[in-house]
Image 1 (cartoon, rainbow, N blue to C red):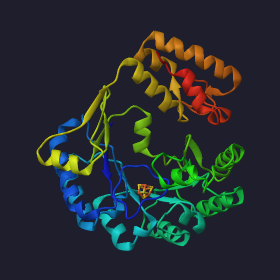
Image 2: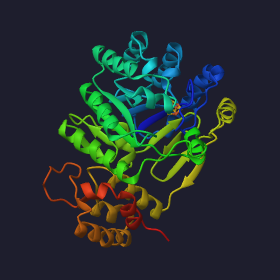
Image 3: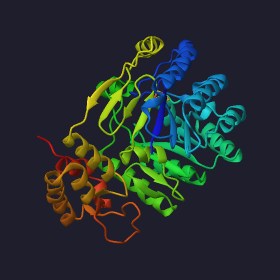
Image 4: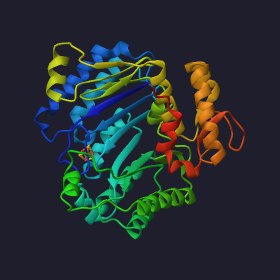
Length: 385
Ligand code: SF4
């Protein structure tokens, strides 16, 4: 299995919490599109297998024009065999969604839409500088569903400045009424360099209290479980097993090729990434130079990545796999540390891949209590010199 990630680093305006690499300068959009297509040509042999998933992330992929979307798909079809591709996800801002755009996406083969909704409270949306409102978000989901996109994911944020539990419940009420297949939900973090971080430092906004943060998260887990969503990863919930195949690949150690400025790639032995500057990225690509920086992973790095990513999922980490892939010393370390948390009820035996629920397995994953203290657990299970 393998995947392709395509980074589209354009945003109409910057959200106040966001530190992702993106630009509001759209004058280079066409050139950037050409660079992505050229990078595909240069790197077509970097992918060992035909891609199973393609993910357009950003920035805001829906800032691409219809013609730019078509150009990228023409190049994808030219340089890769998409015949086995099962999932093509396209991130969209709700106010970019209209019949014309969705028709193009259908035509080119997109079968999963991920919408950055964040909240259904217009005051909170304004506070974080999102450009859509609640009504646009609801209409966008309904329009996409009416046009046959049944695999829709929405992003929701909690812990926003001034947000209370009643508001969070209202947002969840609306989200659940939309009956989407997938919900990703994250707590706001105040990243350095963002507007919200500056406002926090100036005392103009305040972080929500730790107890309230916990209540937001518990409410999310409980309400989504009641509504039939499975928490298959700490921050990701799916109905009818509509797991994000692309993101699951990251958690399952499957190689992927990242195209575009700042995109990351992984090929079992090394991680690499393109420059976080569109200018440098485009100059290099048009000179046929692949300017990726590389980091060769040693056994310990790979073990740490495996533990952190697999334990976040319902499938969990497997002791036999650890021994096979990383050797008996790391397997013994994992077992020794994991036993302590199993004893405390913070870890439990996971479902594993191909293992039915409630069946004992060598897969270990977080228990409900463990989810709330996952960072501390990961720290002890990792192997650090
Ligand atoms: S959150 Fe998304 S839309 Fe907002 S600035 Fe970041 S990348 Fe752009």
